Each structure stands twice: as structure tokens, then as C-alpha cells.
Image (cartoon, rainbow, N blue to C red; front, side, top):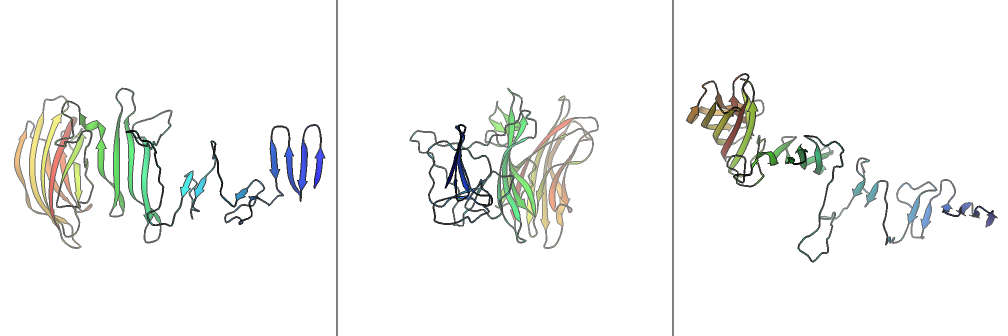
Length: 329
């Protein structure tokens, strides 16, 4: 052991390693290419090789505040992503992350995803939960996603949407939308005939159907006379669908309006295209402008049933539709 002293600092060298104190900072510095080990129960299983690296071979307790300014990897993740500051890995079935709030009061814990932006704007995604797994390649794939999107960040009139997407036919597709903009405070309704406050289910319902029936909602604004899809319902091979659609439209200044009530039967055979059986049945049509229109379409490109509306050139029209589906497969 060699000791060198001065009025400014003292250095101690042990086997080439350096211990020093400059009066405010105590430094332990191994030789270049070496790393610290506290304890003697093992060696690094990662890539510790620098004299700024350290290994604790036993238990490690911190009773005060901790600052972790780099990536945190727990459980040796195999392919950590530098875009994520925290990585957890477990091989235990049902294992994962558990956060406990030990509070006997009425309010439990809270998880907050905060998007700290100095210039929030319409369409900004505040926070997203993604549900990933491997596909057959194997490739890391997002099979489901839930996220919140700002619709209006203006203080006093703030609105947002929560979207849920799932993987359908190899594409991550929105199936549920909780739409704050479609809430009517005077009726406590959100969207036509949806009796849950602040919820607009299946706005443009690009979804598959797990039960025998489904009720969906679509909204659209047109400003021209182009035939436009307000809602689309994918149809799988072997499916038969009864579609009932009620649509209302209103010109922006209130001078024109319309109602359409349509029914149609659609099917898709194995290895075949979506097909309409017979003609669309018009249960009822009431309109103040005969140039407006509504149709049910067999979309053989997307293999879906489309609900299309047609407005008038240079005219702003707001449309809403209520769709009832019954399926046999």
C-alpha cells in the first residue's frame, strides 16, 4: 500500500486501485478495465468492464431517496429497447409487476401517465398502453393498444378521446372509442341511443364480432356531393349479416334535414367476396332535399359492409347513424 499526502488531498493505492479524498468527494477507482465488486458471491453476468462499474453480489438496501438517471433493467431482459427507461423480465407464469397501496382509507393507489408538453395540440397522444407478444416469425408485435388522445386542449373547453385497438386481419384496428366530444350534457347521452355518459361505442366500427349481435354508432360531416362511408363492418368468410341502419342528417344552418331507415342482408362464402342478398329495403325515408342519399354497400375490396351517405356540393351536413347487426356464422 502506498500513501501520498498533500494539503489538498490524500491518495491511497491498493494493488494499483486508488482511494482518494479531495475534501468534498471520496473516490474509489479500480484499475482501467476492472470493475468494483462488493461481496464475493459471484462475478458479472452482464458487461461490467469499466472502472466506473460496480457489482453488489449480495442484497442491497437503500433507505433514502434514489436517483436512477440511466436505463433500469430488472430480471435480465433479453432485448432491452433504448426507447424505454425501465425494463422488467420474468419467466414465471402469471408473474409481472405489482404495485400495492397500503392505505386503509377509501381511496386506493393511482397510476398517472403524464405527457409534459409545453404546446399541447389536438390529436396529441397523452399516454399509451400496448400489449405485445411474438408472432410466428417470431417478431415483437403489438396485438392490442389503449391510448388517450387530446381533442381540445383549450382550458375551459378541454376534450379527449380514449381509443382501444386490437389486431384484426394483421392490422391494428380501432374497435372502441370513448369520445368526450359526443357527450350531450342536457340528456346525459353520448351519441345517438348510447346510454352511457361520455361513451361513443364503435364510431366507424371497424371491428369483428364476438357475439350474435352488435349495436354500433357512426358520425360524419360532409361538405360535397361525394358518396362517403360513415361506417364499415368487416365480414368474415362464412358469415351472414342482417344490417339495420337508421341515419339522420342536418344541414349546418338547419334549413335541410333527412332521415333514412334501411335494412339489408349480406353474406360471404368461403374464399368468396362479401355479397348482398337481394336489394336494400327502405323501411322509411323522410328528406327535405331529394339530392341527399344513403346506401348499404357490399365492399369487395375491404370485405366489409359499408354505410355510405351523399350530401350536396358546397353544403355542410352532419350525419349520425345507429346500426344494429345480427350475425349467423
